[in-house]
Structure formats: C-alpha cells, structure tokens
Amino acid sequence: MKTSSSFSILFWVNLSRTKNGEASLYARITVNGKRAAISLNRKVLIANWDSDRNKAKGTGQKSRILNTYLDETFNQLFQAYQDLKSEHKEITARSIKARFLGLDEINRSVMDIICYHNEDMKGKLKWGTQKNYFTTQRYISNFILKAYNSTDMFLKELDYDFIIRFEKYLRAYIPQDHHKKLGNNTVMKHIERLRKLINLSFKLGWMVSDPFANFHAKFIKTERGFLSLLELQEIEKKNFTIPRLQLVRDLFVFSCYTSLSYIDAINLSADNIRIGIDGELWIYYNREKTTKPIHIPLLPKALDIIEKYRDNQKAILQGRVFPKISNQKLNSYLKEIADVCGIEKNLTFHIARHTFATTVTLSNGMPIETVSKLLGHSKIATTQIYAKVIERKVSDDMNRLRKHFNTIEC
Image 1 (cartoon, rainbow, N blue to C red):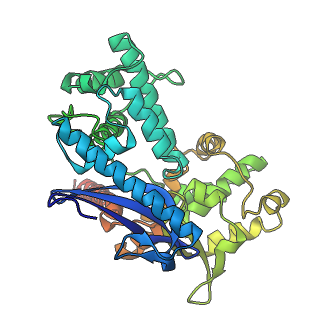
Image 2: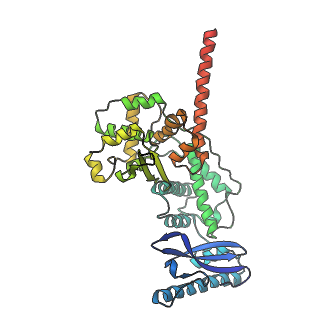
Image 3: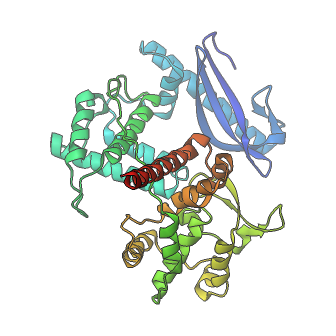
C-alpha cells in the first residue's frame, strides 16, 4: 500500500499481545523513515490475517467487513496526507496521525492534554501512578488560576517562564492537609509529570516549541530509610494487646522478611504460596506496580506470621492471607508502633522493603544480584542504592571504632 517514496501506510497485527489466537490491528504511517502507529480498535484471528496483502483472508462476512473498514481507514489516512500537503503544512507521521484522529486543531489547551492523557491512560497505569498524575494536574489548575487568573491556557502560550513560575509556585505552596512545604524531589516529580504531558502534546502534533528546552530538573539524592537489626527486633518482640496494632506490626515484619510492598502483601492469597525448586515454600507473585513476576523463598519468621493468620475468618472470607487494612490506616498505626517501641524514624510501610534490602539481606552477605531479583528490580543499578547505604553504615561503624581507639590511647 505504498503511495510515494516518502509516505506509506501499513496495516499489521501486534503479535506481542495475543489472546485466544487473536491480535490487535494497527495502522503504521511512515514518512521519510519516521513512523507513527494508530490502534484500529479491531482484533483479528492470526490464522486469518494475510500479512503480505495486509488484509483478512477469505470472503466470509467478518473478513469482508474488516477489509472494508481497512480500505476506508487507508483512504482517510491518505486524505489526511493530501490535506496537509495542500495546506502547505509540515508532513510527518505524527501530523498525519493527528489529522486522522482529529487532534491537530491549532488552539489545543492545557486542559485538553490533561483530559486526553487521563482517557489514554485508563487501564494502562496503576491506580497509584494515576493518583499522582491527578495530584499534579490539580496543582497545574490551581497555578494557572492564581498566576494567570484563568481556568485554562492554550498550549502554544506555554514557555520557559511558565515552567519557572510553576516551579516557584510549588516550592512556596503549603498543602492544606499539613503545614510542611513540598520537598525538592516532590516538586521535581510534579515538574516531571508536566513534562510528560508536554511531550505527549508534541507526539500528537499539538505543540511546535518546547518550553522545557532550557530547563533541567534538579533531584537531590537521598538515602533510603531502613531499620537496624536492633530496631527490627524491638518491633518483633513487642507485645501488642490491641488487635489493629498486632495486624499492622505483623504485616510490617512480614514485609521486612519478604520485601513485599503494601499492595502486594495485602493482596497475597494462598494460591501465591507454593512449593519451590528446593522443596520449601515460596511466594510466586506478579508485582502490582510493574506486573513483573517475583519468586521469593519464605524465611522462617515470614512463615510463622502466615501460620498465625491461617484461621483468621476475615482473611478467609476475603480470599487473602491477611485481613485487609487501608494503606492510610496502616501507616498511621505504624506511627503509634514507632512511638511505643522508641523508634524515632518516620516509620512507613515502605521502610520494611528497604529493611529487607539492607538489614535482612545485603548486611548478611547476600549477593546484590540475588537481592535485586528478590526485589523485582529490572535494573541492578536500582538495587545498588541500597549497597551504598550499607557502605555508609560501614563507614559510620568504622568512625565510631576510630573514636573508641582514640579514647583508649588518650
């Protein structure tokens, strides 16, 4: 279906995502070697697809209907190309895609790209990530209202000054639910999400200049908080008479010995616990955040906690290993536990995962490659952050030892 030496249209099936022998259909636009793909929201049986002719095989009703749709789509894409050409506009794969989808109007706004992003990301992003975008979008809306006395702005109005003013607004903003200003890295995260929205605008052909061209995000490297062995033991041996604190303590300690995040621990079911390659019990689970499969051998303390809740009626009714509790309540109760145990650190559930990486594994000589696999990291560089924490601990311990010897010599 080639129409010129620089412009072509190809229909293809995405074989990387097949289900029940069916695959999704896409149109690929190519202009001067640069491509853009469009989902056609149609599926076809792989066995019925003719990849040479870019059509469905056979003359049955389903094939005829699909081939008619493909012909219409081809004509519309070609017309989009012709229209852009006659209007003397820049012809790229992205601009043809935008014209075909009706997304190349001149005056698209900030709220337009936000709405497009929200709709496009449905089912693609996990709720935790979506929630972060909603927070960023609320900040953007409030900023535009305060700085420009408007509820919206055209994307073409965004410039470097807009980015700098937005950054200053975030740094000065005091959230209503607490009186602490946003930290540097939190501000940069919001800026980063705005940047992704702007990049999406470029891909859609809605913007021609980049307001981020001269902007550089400045993240401050921070060390991951974790519990020392003594702090972990203090929590483990503490006797809590209040059931909610018992549950939260057990979930936290369980995560310290398995590395599971809150959502992964709370969603754990009996089906996820199976006999592993060594004949011992393992956790087999796909991480909620990344969908990456993880296989974790269960340590004795983790097994003891599972056994403790084996007959818990609430957990049984929910089909889970542990009874459900919200992340907000869990982290609130962890503050109580920290106070009771005399731990001055800001105790959150995620510290349990860091404690697994540092105190439970790396500090006990487990190779970093193994720890990385247990944590479900896709890059070992992510795990090396914890190794640096261990090095800092070694340095601090050695400094204390030096002071001790200096005291003896004096």
